[in-house]
Length: 441
Ligand code: HSE
Image (cartoon, rainbow, N blue to C red):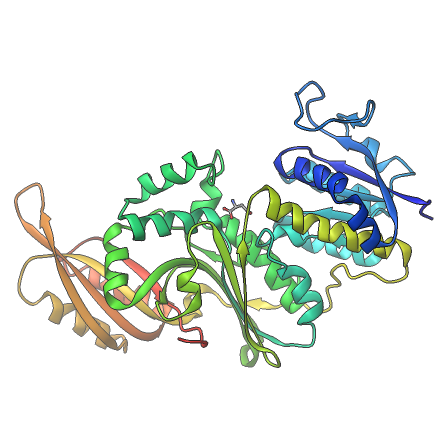
């Protein structure tokens, strides 16, 4: 039973942890009125007790062992903001087993261990809240679980990594090459100290897994997602995209294929038509388009990262958890309800494509490549080219772009392997899917 004042245990006092602590103090009267209960932050677990803190803390509130939170019988709910997956996994497991609702923003934890944690939450009837794990301040998790609950979700297509979107925007608007755009994102504090997961697509993939689990009620594991990052995007691809009426975005694409009882789940840089709202999402902003069978198309837009947006998402969950502690028989944490679904292998996915080659400057190249695409039954909607440069031996090469009609990715891969053998193509081609997304498309 909870006492007169709900007792909170906060694990992690980094950027977001500090934001959450400050906001719990600053907005106390508002939060208490909305949650209909008063509260206290009883203990805060940190790694380094000696580190100077930006916030004034009551003596004795800090501990360097998160177990002190889980084992404290007076603590009613736990906010996990320590990051990483190993300790966070142990902490969340232990908290749920101890009957304490958990609020977390840890996308890597849920992508890796979500199935286990959601099952435990369901078995024990102890909620796990995770609004901050996807899209920062955008209320996408609760929207899927509440406001859109009556819909069969046909698709979720979104930009859910702010760092990579900042880089692609800087490449497009300022003409910067990838590494300079990344450096700029770093200097402005947008990129993580180690931005690997942001640029290789895995940060977005973790969030995609969470959204797919929510939308389809199904356990999923990271090995099922086809993931490509933005590292190899060349400024010339950005220029071709603009010329052809598109913008390149790192897109998360989740689609239900009801007839195949399968999900399409991929993260990759893609061509987005300049007429679509997602193409207008710039800088560190995120946007998520959800299409449901009853609601139709919706788009959620906002800041996908940073102290304040993430704090807003965490505290939304904390208020839910506080309310539900007063009504313990029911909770709005995630209840998986469906069997595991098959995820379509990347080779079986079908979209139109942009394929950009570097080719030797000689006659018959377009004809030879076109003939090979035709042999694989792949239609061409447009061809364009641009002057390239001379190689080290003074031989000239050019850029050659094929816009392809919808085809199966496996078929495309086979045709490209054969095209590589022609001897007129230099290096690997750049292959980007072209997304057709309904609304203003
Ligand atoms: N690195 C993430 C991003 C932070 O750039 O979107 C929020 O998850």
